[in-house]
Image (cartoon, rainbow, N blue to C red; front, side, top):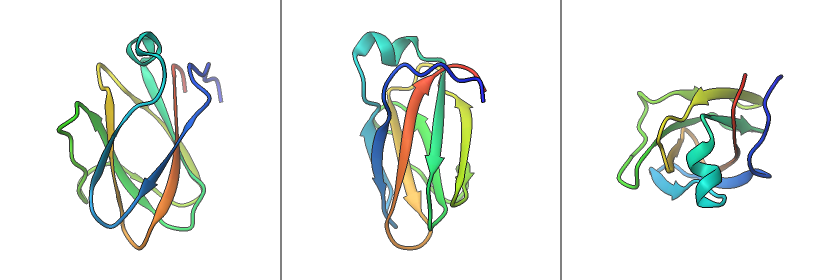
Length: 99
């Protein structure tokens, strides 16, 4: 994986109700990052979406299965919303660019 990171990673608790949190890091790093690497160590799958502070996740948003990591374009997003399918799940979000 070729992914220069702009922050050390942010742990986010996903639950069965949608939750929105700000992407962590210095404002200039959040603004400069073009992509977001979403890592789901498991055991449950998580839906997520990036956007502004009003973004909400539902079951039509991208899904990160347990044990997977995927890179997505961030654009100008400053927040991430999550939704766990079953129970609570922690994901890790890293800002940067690449694949």
